[in-house]
Structure formats: structure tokens, C-alpha cells
Length: 327
Image (tube, rainbow, N blue to C red):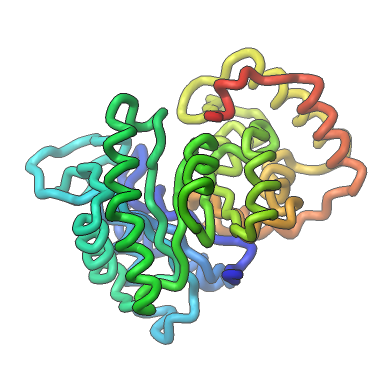
């Protein structure tokens, strides 16, 4: 069993996700995270095409020279130089590279070596195959899966056996590929984003299976890309798009229950995944010292035991279409 802190920081936002984040703001975020005691950071080459890893690596070198903080990064994309600028794949004015999917043996090794350099670390605690799945890749899924099973997975196992990484797994937002790979290979951990939240319970059966298989689970996207990050104020996004009527009805019912209990909806959203004993960490994406401070407060907020069954009942009373769960 791998041992990670309960709270981690997702670094996609400091890779300029959706907006330009200055070096100073990114560093202030990381400084605040270390000061608050956050000791797990999840990143990926895709986040700003190396930018998030570079920024995290610089902060780790200053704040954690002994390598005590846990770090996870990912493989599955190679970065190639580009002259393109502006917004690309959701990242704005990021580093001058273009990501290309490649889950093959040699590509995994090259990606890992590049991440080591950007992160300034010889050893990475957890290495995850990133965004593999049919919903992501469509008709190319079978080829990408074959490349991973025929070579990429072996490269990850070899890195683990050599001591260069502590554990291996996948980092995805699709439930079906998790079941498929659990049938085929041994995994230490699964990072599942957006599929085990107050709103979307699509990974419930997966978590129970992981418990039986002794596979640790990390939950990303606890706010479902924003709808749960505030008390339903301002423009709302669910899985990076406007919420439909079913999602909004479920969110409104849960928000009302939280208000009645004197609990902030984001606090319940952050704490919800940790109720399952197989979830070892939750990793909201953070940018700005204020978000770090808000996250610490939400994690420590007192939630009446009676609220959880009420929220579960609200989820049952407002069913979602199966498509929402990426199953």
C-alpha cells in the first residue's frame, strides 16, 4: 500500500489552464501550499506543456530539497516544439510545445526523463498513464491501448523495479477504462477525476472493486470543474460545460441541504470523496494563495454526520443520465 497525504494540490491551474498565471502568482500559490502543510502535488507534462512541472520543480527545490513531499506525474504524451501561441488545449500562452499522444515503451521512458528534469527530482513517487480511454481517443483508442499494454506498461513496471518511481497507475476521467485495465494489469493506484463527487457518483462500483484489489484511489476534480466550488453563484460549469437541467437540479438540492445544516457546499464537496476508505487523497486544482487558504478551511470544516445521508438521498432523488458518469 502506498501512503500519501489526504490533501494534495492539482497543478493544472498553475500551468495556465484557461488563463495566464504569472510566475509570481504561481510561486505564491506554491509557497502558500507548502506553508499550509500541503505535502502532495499532482502534475503532468500536459499541464501548460511542461510549464506546471517547471514551476513545481523550482518550488520543490527550495521548499523540499530532501524530497519529503509526494509527487505524482504522468506519461502518455510527448511534447514537441511548436511556434503556436495563444490558447491551446485549454492552456493559454503556455510553454512552446505541442502534446502528442504516445503510450509506447520508448515514449514513456522519454516522457519520464523529461519530467524528472523539469521537476528536478531523480525519483517520482507515483507515475500515471494519462487520459487513456475510449471517450478521449475515439477510434484511436484501440491503438493507444495496445501501445500501452504492449510497451508503455512494461516501461512503467521497469522504472518501478529500478526504484525510479514508487508506484504506478492511471490518471483518467473515464470509469470504463479503469475496469478494463484492472482486468489486464496490476496497478498500485488510480487517479479518477470528476467521477466520485457529490454530483457524480459514477465511480462508486470502481472504488469498491479497488478495495477488493488493494488499489489505492486518488480523487481529482472534486468540484466537477467549478459547479461545486462556490455556493452555486456566478457562471456555473460542470465537466467544463454549462450544466444541464438534471445536474443543476441535483446541485440545487444539495446546496439547500448544506445551507440548512450551516455548511458551505464546497466544504462538503471537498470532504465527500474522503468518506470512502479506499480514497487516500483528494486533489483540487489550486491557483492563488486565497484558494490554498480556502481549501485548508474547507477540509477542516465541521460537517454534521446527519448531512451525509441527506446528501446521498438527494443524489438518489435526482438521477443523472448514465453518460454523465463516463462509464
